[in-house]
Image (cartoon, rainbow, N blue to C red; front, side, top):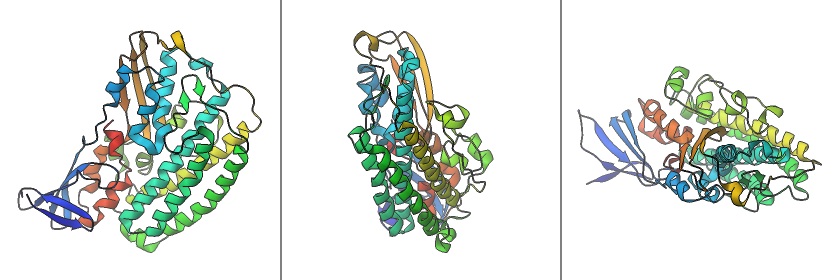
Length: 384
C-alpha cells in the first residue's frame, strides 16, 4: 500500500487505477471537520468522480436514547455537533415535550431564551465554518479573527448557561436558568461589536480579488439539483431556494421576531460563504430583538417536570427546527415507559453529504478542500 501527498498536508492512499485514471482515498484521518473518508477518481488534476464514505465516528446516539429517560438523554445528544449543541437539542426537546404532554405549559420567557441560545450557537457555528474555510484558503487572518470573535458569544453563553461549549440548557418544560444580572447590556454590546466586524469579513472574503478567483464559479450547485438531492440549510439557500424552517414552520415564538432569509442564485462556493455571512447578521438582529424582549420580562423559565410526570404517554412525536447547518429533526416513539422506545435523528450533515459527488465533479484537485468544506459537512453529526 503506497501513500503520497496530494495537496500540502493531505496524504492519500493510492488505490487501483481504473480506465487510465487514478483513484485515491482522502482520509479517514481528520480532513478538516472530523474523521471521514472521501474517495476521488482523478484524471490529471481534475476530479471525475467522488464517493463519500461515512461511518468512522459512529456514536450510537439513537440506541443510547432507549436506556435513558427524557432528561438523561439531553447531555449525550449534544455530542454529535458540539458547535451547535442548542441546534440539535432544540427539536429533541420539542418532540419530548409533545410526547410528555407538556408542550402547552412551556413559559413564554423560556421560549425566548431558547431562541436566544439557538442563535448564539448559529453564529458560533458559522464562525467556526469561516475559520476552517480560511485554513483551506490559506487565509490566516480570517482563521484567527473567526476563532477569536466566536469567543464573544461563547462567553455570553457561559454567562447564561454555566458552560462554554455544550450547554444542556434546554429541558422538558423550559430552560434551566434565568438571565443573570448585566446579561442584557453585555449582549447588546456584543451585537454591536460583531456587526462592525462583519464588514471586515465581507471585505476580506468576498471583495478580495484572490478569493473571487478561488471561489466564484467553483463547485456550483444549481437550484434544481439542490432540491432533488434534498439539500438543507445555507447550502440550499445559496442555490436560490428560500426555505427556512423558522419561517415556513415557525416554532418557539420565531414568528414574533423579524428577520430576513437571505438567498443567492449562483450556488457556487463563494455563495455558500456569503450566505453564512448574511445569516450571522440576521442572527445578530434576532439576538438583539430577543434580549430587548427579555429585558424586564417577569415570570418563570420552566414548568417543572419530575417523577411520574417523566413517564411519556404511548404514541409518537415529531419535531423539526432550523439548526446552523439546516433542518434538524427528531422522531420519538414511546411505549408508555420512562425511556423512549425509539428515537430517530435526522441531521442536516447527513442530508448534505449527498451534495459532495455533484459539487466535486470536474473540480481541480487543489480546489477539493474549499469545495468540500463550503457545505459545512460535519461527519460527527452525520454519524449520529
